[in-house]
Image (tube, rainbow, N blue to C red; front, side, top):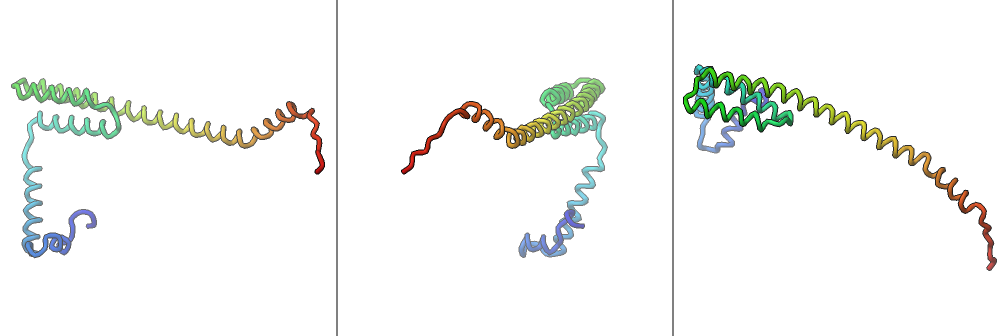
Length: 159
């Protein structure tokens, strides 16, 4: 499995002579068991909603949305929870954060799509202007020049 765990030879090379292969296997087994134990414990509804709210706010931040007010709402909910407020009220506030985060994520994606469309239109307009300048400006320039200076007489002085 590439990318999952490094091979034992890499770990033993990295650890040097301090770790032998059986110790490496025991270390990997211990880490895997500790990870399984931390996932296996049950969470309260407030903890579950807090995790959902945090993930939603992180997704808003990753989509370049404004997550500042959402973080403030989470902090308020945590302060209420620590002050001994009703867990149902705290869960309701965290559900509100999740709903607002979904709206903010959708609006940030729409804004990003609009900005991308505007940027594409600007680039296309610049390309058209460059082509039109290259194609038509020399002819317009020389016609104007001939119109202004076309009646001049040029005398050649022989040397």
